[in-house]
Amino acid sequence: MTNAKPDPPLDFPDWPAALAAAPLRPEERERHAVTLRWYLNFCRRSRPPVCKQSARD
Image: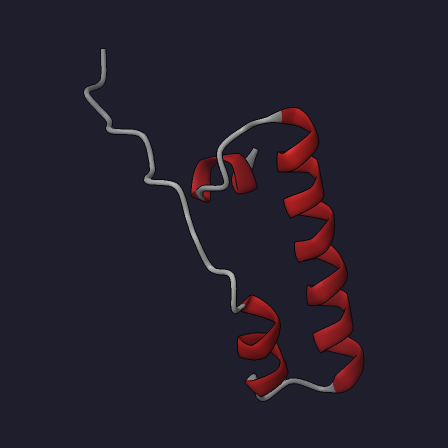
């Protein structure tokens, strides 16, 4: 039995600005943006917390 604590929820409302400032090629930046938007939409629809564990799952 493990006593692992659940990951705390993430709150990062300025992710688009942080991604825009990241040193990435435009096509790579867009792939990350698409993935983040998909994940956040999935969390809104399915109600899992936005945290490291739900992103891994």
